[in-house]
Length: 313
Image (cartoon, rainbow, N blue to C red; front, side, top):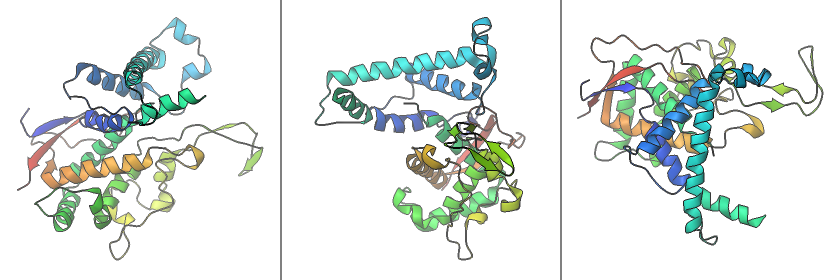
């Protein structure tokens, strides 16, 4: 593989998880750390074997004792145990130097709360970034517009920051459109009806489990017109300003909306803005155009594809 060509397969996962863990656990890990890489691989496997609407083990749970490979149970169990061990060791390390009057991170806050009386989002954030690169290599004209916008606002002498975000409406629209066209989470977590309800002639009893099909909402032809087309302009007004759409509910709705939405949006923006500032992205010569059909799971991700990264002058 050439030096400027990379395989897209969770390439940014370690960096994303490092940012999140710096906030949660107060430390950062080397990309060569074997334990940390193994944990990320286990988490990735966990999301790939899951199903957002449930699977046969939710209906017939004892099947896992007959065949542990059913519905990826063995992989999920291994990932869960490894994650628990990692968190346990981190919490024990924190307890050695814990000062309840000077919390350093979320684990210290957790320990303080325990004295008074997490599952990572790196997978979804990393996949969001990968989907964006997918649509960049498939739409070089859009990538060119983004380069021009970033250069005009940021220049070439420094790198983008969150302060630049309000002045980069086309980039904001392009990121939002990548969220829409291939949503990371095709369905919301389970909700529950608090009382008997009726919807379009159907009786829904109190206590019913409710799933919202996010993919259907974000790809509704009646609202979006051409949902299969990657078109950032749908989030811009006639003056080129970014406009929100009430149908963009990719982070969920109600009380169970994703708690990490703000952090996820900021991380994705900084990663994408910085890499677009520094590189051109394309399909390596001789490679087929990558497919936009997602790899299914509890969260989705693009199929494996290679990217050619060329330094911008």
